[in-house]
Length: 368
Image 1 (cartoon, one colour):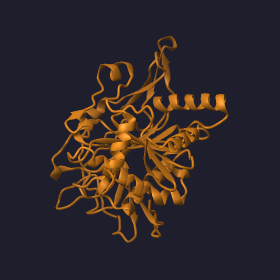
Image 2 (cartoon, helix red, strand yellow):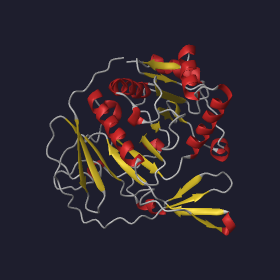
Image 3 (cartoon, one colour):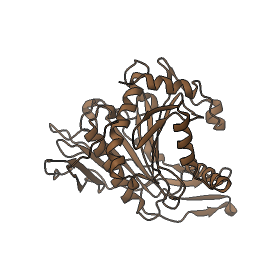
């Protein structure tokens, strides 16, 4: 799979919005000065979420009732992620941009860290929903998708993810940074413009905590790293491998939960995006764009709804965990969706309608 070293450096321009939120432009090569001013009459933000610890499971749950008022599926001419043009003001004051990142106007998590308080004789634990939520706009083109990006633009997005991971991980009280994209109304996307999000959590997410516990048990039992063994086994077995490069491998996991689910791992294990080397960064856009395009070709029904999720090690658990991307769709056939009903939602016990081996075969056959 081809890769190229992009010689033009990434330019990072930090500015702000009318209510005090931060906005960052990422540009490669020559770009217009990023000095446009947000002229909207916005009130300053006041954080209003809370985190509560489930005493039965030990999982943190975020309560963010203020998000009920967030923008929901506006028409294209009112999209808040398009550039500000022709007298219409948006979240991006510039008339054009390459990649832009800004603090979410309706964040699930916001504000400085604070210690949770105990209630009811220690049974209930709650605290302010500290942390940070950001929006990543991949392109100014409202009608595009990530799969439509050039490798150069996809690399710029990777640079933005990496920069934000580094900066957010360093904030007081932040334990884990999560970069992800939801695509498609079927997924529940509220804004159609191509974009993703970044959450900086004040806790380790429940799934990551379970994975870390499994990795620790594997190390204790074998003396080896779980993810290095997992990747080596999938590469050696080969039946579920979808795409390989010199520095990355994409495969359908042995116990896939979703009808079509692919995990993309760097062949050299790293804990998070900041630890990737230049060879890994250069090759990533080509493999990732090919995976997205194969997902779109699976059903012959236009753009496939998906979730794309970067799994990064929490700040204090970098030794055993492995950076990887999980890409999956809720579509199980051209006219059927996979709903999380009683078994999955009620008991967190997944039932998959497609064998991982068949899913891998179909994704290999969907090559361009």
